[in-house]
Image (tube, rainbow, N blue to C red; front, side, top):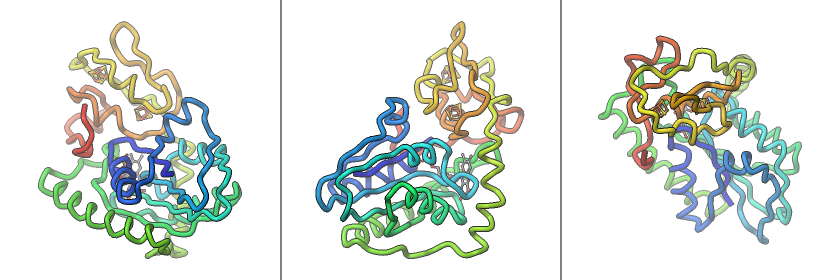
Length: 253
Ligand SMILES: Cc1cc2nc3c(=O)[nH]c(=O)nc-3n(C[C@H](O)[C@H](O)[C@H](O)COP(=O)(O)O)c2cc1C
Ligand code: SF4
Ligand code: SF4
């Protein structure tokens, strides 16, 4: 059983690629969260995985919340692993998440991070097509290596340093406290397709008179709405107006 969360498709692709090599089903944490389904049962010896992106050297808030509510039964002998996708570094996110899961009865046996295309469009312009192809190709090789390790119940190939953990404890609280939606808007290119409302994992967007309105003060900042709008109408202040959009090639519209 592999739980995943994904804004722009990297982590979903990672979960599905690993899941298909292990013959394990994948479960969307955002959907389970929306349906308020937090109770799961695993079969004897079934492996349990968590796959999600790194935000500010920590987990997306929706992942953190899901983990604190999660109740799994039948997992006494389960091998538990975690795969984080990131643009450059996962910092001390491994230890941060391990602690949360340990408090809820799940001991992480292996942690892996995978470099994928950075989707943090609020921060900087995203890589060009050529770079993306190279990054995704390397990511596929890394994912296959990880899946092979998981199949034989392998251990982490990298653990965070004290410096990494310091990064998480310094930077991650800015994300948790921030994440405001004030700067989001849709410009005149909006074609009222309703996609942004449909894909937002926390229902922060409601369509009013055919245009999106951000109705929550905070959201996950998963950047799915900005990157997936088919006409690039969604902006975050002035920062995103001229920046390239990104979705993993496996994501349809
Ligand atoms: C709000 C936000 C914060 C991010 N912070 C980090 C970070 O701390 N370190 C990093 O390497 N990548 C960071 N990224 C990049 C993502 O982790 C990376 O692109 C990830 O693969 C996206 O996964 P997804 O397509 O499944 O949403 C951040 C992205 C967003 C949107
Ligand atoms: S996804 Fe873009 S075009 Fe579609 S409703 Fe939202 S802002 Fe408008
Ligand atoms: S409003 Fe946009 S960035 Fe915020 S959680 Fe919803 S889809 Fe993600």
